[in-house]
Amino acid sequence: MTTRTPRRREDDLFIASPAHERTPASVREQVDPEQTPESLEAYRRCTLWHDATQAVPGAGSTHATLMLVGEQPGDQEDQASRPFVGPAGALLDTVLAEAGIERKAVYVTNAVKHFKWELRGKRRLHKTPAQREVEACSYWLERELAKVRPKVVVALGATALQAVLRDPKARLAAHRDRVTHIGDLTVVATWHPSYVLRAPSAQARKTALAQMIAALLRAHALTGQS
Ligand code: URA
Image 1 (cartoon, rainbow, N blue to C red):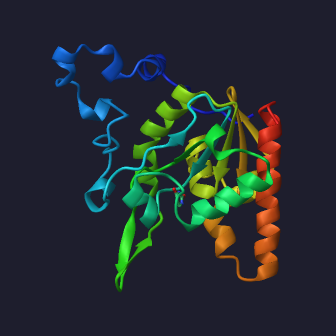
Image 2 (image 1 turned 30 degrees about the horizontal axis):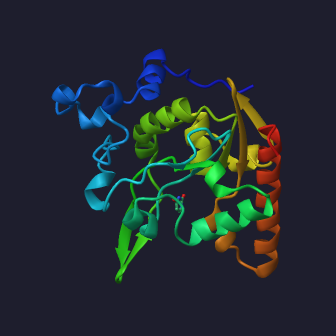
């Protein structure tokens, strides 16, 4: 069993009762936005927000037993402030449909909440987040985990896996299609949808897609609700 830094009790309390719900209107203005995860002004624990349009928090059912974690928002997610709404999201929707999972029944988020990019011509191209940026954003991922309390987390790609396990050395090759238990959480790791989209051949794409569907089926079965 992998060990993982336990969540702090005060974090659980905080997320169970968001500041805007438990704070009287008269003192709401005094609430530090950094301490209010619901606010898009939050998620600023590193400098990535400077170049992003806005934060992209997680979305979906806060009662979900299954949580999907990606790497970071892409160009379209950055503009919509919703996770997985671009090409990678379309692939993810296909995988969910093939696995018989309703997207609205799951909670979808990213390890990093702002789009990191570099300009190539007129296009903003994805840049992999640095370890320090993943670590900075783990503050928010922990709160999402504490709020939703999923039974099973699907890590989509290596960055998500490292964030969920809180282990920068975790490798997808070692965890993919294997079930990992960390505390009361079950983690299934699989390809990131962009990996499937970029597969070098139709056959490689078909294989990776089938592996992703199998991982989602397995994760869904592990929730006990399939
Ligand atoms: N890739 C991700 O990892 N997350 C998104 O939300 C979109 C693309």
